[in-house]
Image (cartoon, rainbow, N blue to C red; front, side):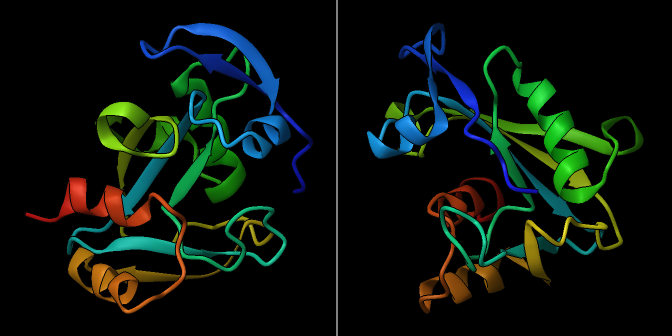
Length: 169
């Protein structure tokens, strides 16, 4: 599904809403004071389900990505966005999975692209992912994924940082 140019809330350094802008404006101005959600799908062997973004993606086409990620649209909570994005990207109903919050990150404290909540979902089968969002997927141990990324595998900018923060000792 091609997204329209959604309105996103602009937040201050304390993650309090101070305004809103179109997604395209935020990216053209290289802003980081907006909100996103990310989730990793992990199986019982400790492998992460890592998708490859489709060529049609406006940013990071054909790059490896977090299992699920998306913008928190204006007026939504992080949890609203998580619920919507899980349905859109992975066809997963939030109420049907075991999910936990891994962490809350900010651009100034953690040097990530936006204010974000990162979640983990336990699942032992491939998600029925949206073919417009992703073209392939891999079950990888975090160490193997980091090896791929260190060898130059193209990936979304925050992927390596999130894996290092939450899955490497």
